[in-house]
Structures are given as structure tokens and as C-alpha cells.
Length: 261
Image (tube, rainbow, N blue to C red; front, side, top):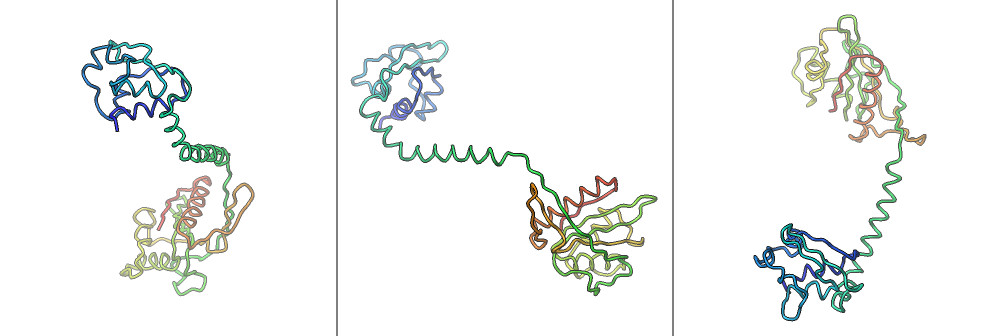
């Protein structure tokens, strides 16, 4: 295949009548540098054709060089006829089977994106279940679920209430982790919630701490009026519920921290 075959293919695909190309563009298309004479001599861009392979590249595609401006490294091509020669037309027809589905896919994607970009309202409806004072509610309590959920720990900092919202795939482990932290015991749960509550949430483990939980079945995600129960055992949905609950805490004016575990 000729070094300049990509130039012929490029011109055959163009739908314009005139193409003003920088020499650098031509080099990008053919994938190599042009000879020195192409940048210094206008005759290199003549339309004589014949044995000159590079000239046949644009002539076979149905184009001719209309003007050369080597001072600005610009070559102006003009189409001679629609579709070029038989060789160019054959190349164009060969590409249609692959290009047509691609164009159809592009149109379909553009149409779908219009729908995807429409404004959407996502809201959360949830119910908190009270677990009570962490100091007094043991880990063995039946009110503490084993599965995933969102915990909210609340404590006093001076005259203000501070809260920590925790998303976890095991409510029981997270709760037990805090209980052990408060008692100064070694953590055997594999959860760092207790440590992070004190370090990042700023909660004093010796102070009274109230705890609530949104457990599976008590959270609904609504999008433009259509909703379903959130799957709190799915990490991404559990995190989403926690983030929305955290925003509610912030909007209520409380100092809050979000932990995704």
C-alpha cells in the first residue's frame, strides 16, 4: 500500500468541497513526515499525476490542489467530482457497513442523553428506630439488627448536640465496636466504628451517647414520585441513604460527621 493511501481515503470520505489543510495535518493523516521538497517546492503539489504516487492520492479521490501557500504551510484542495474515481467510490462503499451502524448508535445515544439530562428529584423517606443510651443498651439486645443499616449516634458538646451518621453492613458489629471502645476493651469485631466515632466524630466515650438506627425495611428511595425500599445490605444503597440522612442533619443546623464503613 502506498504511503499516501491514507490521504486518498481521507479525501474520499470528506463531504466538503474545499479542504484547506496544514502540512502538519497531512503528516498526521499519512502517519509520517512529508519530504523536504513538499515544503519547499510548489511543483510537488502539481496535479500531473501519472507516475507520481503522492499526486495520485488526491487525484484518485476526485480532488485537485487548487492553491499552495508554502509560506504558511497551507495546501488548498478542491473536489473535482462527487465520489472521486472508481477506486475511491469502492473504498467508500466498503466502509458504509461499519459506518452506518456507528452513526445510528451515535444518534440513539444522543437521543437517550436528552432524557438522562432531564432534572430529577431524589428524596428519602426513613424511620428511625430508637436503640437508646449506648451505656445501658447491651449488644445482646434484640433491637440491634445484625444486617446492614445506618446508625446515628448523638452526644452533647458543650451546649450543642453533635451527631455521627454511620453507614455499615453490620449494625451489630458497629454498635459493639463503640461499646467496647467506651469500656476500654480490646476490639474483637473487626470494625473501627468505635475508634472513628471518638477520633473523627469528636464524641467523648465517657459521655452519654444516644443511638438510633434506620434498618432494612425502614428506608424508601423516591425518584420523581416513584419509589422502592432501599436495600441496606447493598453497600452503594446503604451509603446513599447515609449521605441523605447526613444532609438532613446538616440542614437541621446540627454539627454532624459522616462515616461510611
